[in-house]
Length: 73
Image (cartoon, one colour):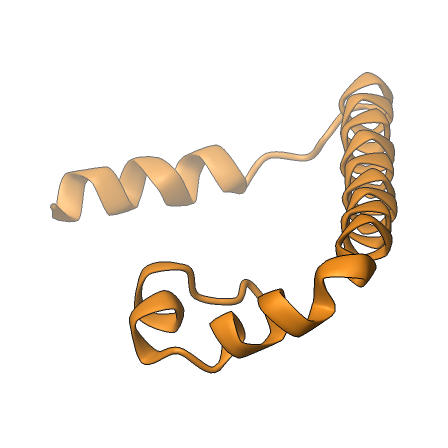
């Protein structure tokens, strides 16, 4: 385990080049886009479930459902 930690320290000790920074920036932009799309999809799902609120809401209070489908927030 100690050897792996030293390798990790060595790998993180370098100085990133401009190209590396640009690649990281692109990946961060992609991650932000995914977060935005997930939020939009959650909104669409909530809107689609609105007519079924009376049926869906009690499910959220069920211990069985909560234990198998924990909220990701």
